[in-house]
Image (cartoon, rainbow, N blue to C red; front, side, top):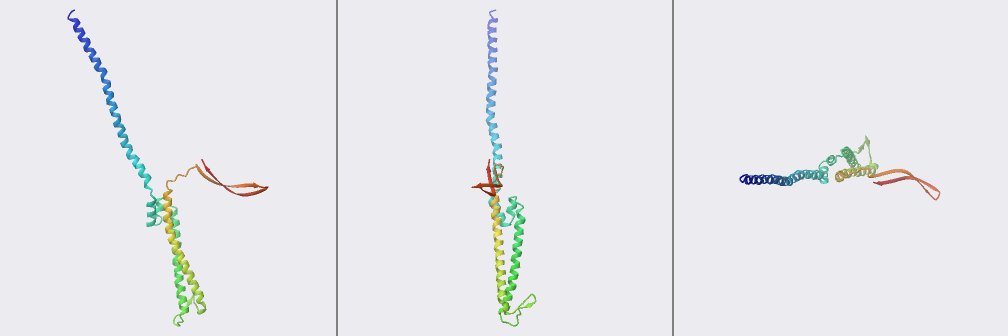
Length: 213
């Protein structure tokens, strides 16, 4: 009995130490799990950072400067960049009409300029003929007037062609600025007929209503 009592005491101490050691294990694993979460947060930030940069690049891609330069190089290119394709035929039809008018007026200007020279040069070797009809000195004012008329129209066509080129650049620049402009139902403009009664008189007209929601 004297030997069994110390042995039992030793066994109880050993089992208590084992229980204390086992109870300490979950605390160490908890520390490990807490050290993992900051790494996961940093990894998520590293993944989200390129996505945010890509979104900012997409917003910065559409540039009014690029639209203006493209329309300056080739009229209509800036409109295609702004996805306003319906404007391209208008630009080229207008340019073709102005070029045709410039050439037609210039040809007539040259004809009447030469005709007025032949009428007033007093040279018998040069016979002024227009549409198969020989002209005398009485047609001098008529020839010079038509010469000035076609010269003015030729110059106006040239000015119009230059203005069309400049407007093409301005239009591309403005459309590029408004490319991401959001138009929704919060802003609406309506035109409708209205009646006004004032001092026993009735007035009819058109009223404009601007609604902001």
